Length: 80
Image 1: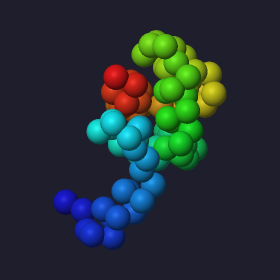
Image 2 (image 1 turned 90 degrees about the horizontal axis):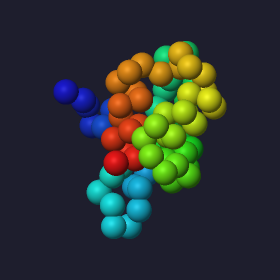
Image 3 (image 1 turned 60 degrees about the vertical axis):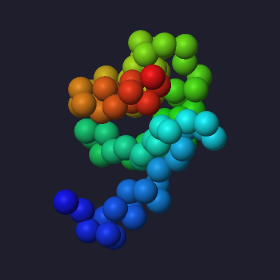
């Protein structure tokens, strides 16, 4: 359960994927502590044609070990 302040902090950094989309993309912190903005994630997703390409680009940019399996799954869900 989150406090109101924690809830607001998460939603302030989120971005909607588009006017007709219900997808809300949140900022992400990688396993090595690098913060990735929701805008950056959206840009990567929009520039890819498939899930595999999304994973390749994100790992290429931030490193092979920067993401937990759960994080990559979340990014792939955003693409879908």
